[in-house]
Image (cartoon, rainbow, N blue to C red; front, side, top):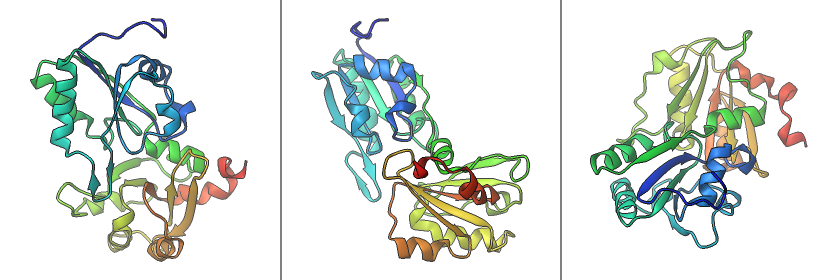
Amino acid sequence: MKKDDKLQAGKVWLIGAGPGDPDLLTVKAARLIAQADTLVYDHLVSDSIMELARSDARRIYAGKEASKHTLPQESINQLLVDLAREGRSVVRLKGGDPFIFGRGGEELETLLGSGIPFEVVPGVTAAAGCAAYSGFPLTHRDHAQAVTFVTGHLKDGTVNLDWPALARPRHTVVFYMGIGAASEICRQMVAHGLPSTTPAAVVRNGTLPDQQTLLATLGTLPQRILESDIKPPALIVVGSVVGLHEKLSWFEKQ
């Protein structure tokens, strides 16, 4: 398909925009963004990615920030249905990967129930992108034989997670949306068996020019976050792989 070929009318493409750096888009994602006549995009989709869209494309912001939702999720679901029924080619653009804490499944269930055709284009999830750009191998034969991605903010607003399963040695845990719950996360990880000296880090705006990597331990991370006044969007990474940052970080040294 050529760049100027038209996409199928009345269809939705659920696309992962990656962690921010536009060069991390898949080839398919970049092509579809450039062809769609309508884009519904989230807060974490960078301006440089949106610049790939057609100049005449309709752009609809549906971003969600902490305690600030432009549209409720149910309204976004229905919006996608309505746009497709208008005969539009719709790209639903989400930061990271749409199936990893992106509510992509909820949106597709609504499309399916309404008879709207769709495709899914995966993206580089924030954990993989931020870790790669911070020098944290999520798995490493000497440090971690498993990695877990977990939300630091449940639907009911709690942080009631399976702490015994998370607080294991030789394991990397990445908390999405966890900055506001950092104190509780660190407290629970230590209470369930990890030493307070376990390396931990926060990565903010990963893969973007203003990326920040804050190094600490489970014992010091909450205070370090307060002192640095670091704000979302950011991930928390826990595990001994964080200790490889000094040797393996490359992006922030450029």
